[in-house]
Image 1 (cartoon, one colour):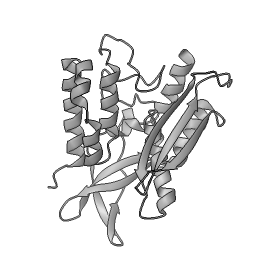
Image 2 (tube, one colour):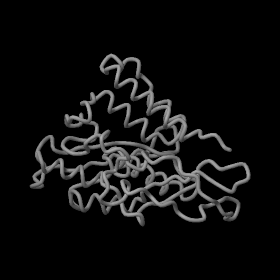
Image 3 (cartoon, helix red, strand yellow):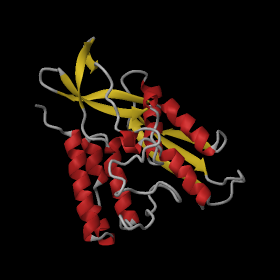
Image 4 (cartoon, one colour):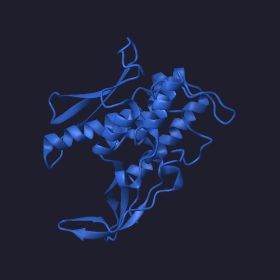
Length: 247
């Protein structure tokens, strides 16, 4: 299935710097520096889907979250190169987001779409960046970055998308939660481990991070000691990013 491998490699490839937007996370007490958090804008994701699978080969659907002001996005891509809608070759991913303060419905739908795209590998490499503290300037009642950080070579077009190319999951073949191919540098991770790891990587709050590891004790029966140790390391790293101590 080399065609499918190529599709997922295209989806997961780093975006051009102009497609990356930045927001401010935690700040220092004196508000001179802030944690720079990158994300891919929705337009760039649409263009990536168009180029990787074709404009007519993907679609998005939305439904409101019950008892909450939020939206769930179901993003589907057609993996049949011939466009014949062969049974079993459609793959879907879902994720949700709360409505935003500005343009609540539009913002919530856009955020849900971007989160669903991450589950297909789009922009996931941004979660592997180290914590970046950057100078701030006041903007009304809040603060914005004075300038955008420079991304490392591995996070630019043509880069691997991994800070250490010897430890990586292959985005090709089956959907991103499939086991990576065997290689001399990396063991073959179990689907259970990859499922939890993806949830940890994409957690954008402490609540989401806590939900990411719910039920891990049960899943541990399906994982090796090496896999559980790796998940603990990834959990600790993501927790530090979300609750970095303000200097």
